[in-house]
Length: 345
Image (cartoon, rainbow, N blue to C red; front, side, top):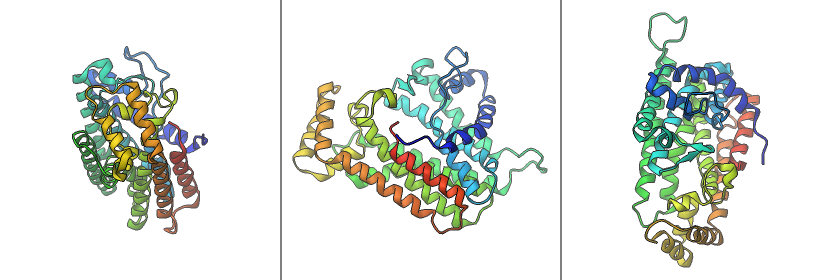
């Protein structure tokens, strides 16, 4: 497995204090579920060693500021905001998917109930925009800077796309099959939009030229598709002890993920066999999941998805080449992208 890039730790140390301060602004009833979700405390409020997630989005935000020659601290409001939006979506996704475990511990709704989880996710969503529109300390006039306003507008756009992607993903559940083009379009919205925002918000807050902001956004969008391709592979063949989810979880939920869509798009015997498994009445058994997994792998769905991740990685790296970004930051963006495409969790 690829070594964890140092920027993930560096960005977490820079951004987490702002994230903690933001969550602490929530009312008493919502603060505990939010802090529990982030892995800072247990359900009873006692300190936790669970820790947060990978922190990819804050790292991208910090690097995007550094890529245009600014201090990474410039990106902190955007990094905190995008992490809040991302986590609001995770809290709600767990409810929609019925997932009772995330990062090797019970999900928010499984601990606090659906009602508290829904409203906690809503609160994290709203908090993201508060963080971005706060007036920086020492700024006169009481109005957010033009850069913060632009960053907020872009976050609205990215969040809208993410929600549309999630809606399309849910709609796929009611379709007998989904082709690869539709799957990629859904995942570009669901994952690519927010990673595109993450990878450019630091540059926006630094007041960078539009061509550099756009290049970083494309990098993030393409990285988002590489990330999702790997995630889709792990959702079927990932090691539960590493991923924190049951083996074959995506198949058990009958998700039309990239490996599945690849096989369905190919038609023939493999598509018919896979469709037959997905059409089984009631919950899929372990044997059903194993059969579907074998069909997909034999038909090339796993290899095709890994190849898609590689293509998207190449496109991400090409986007930030030759636009005048800082060499050191580009090197770190490259290392982070390769880590995403080679990760096992």
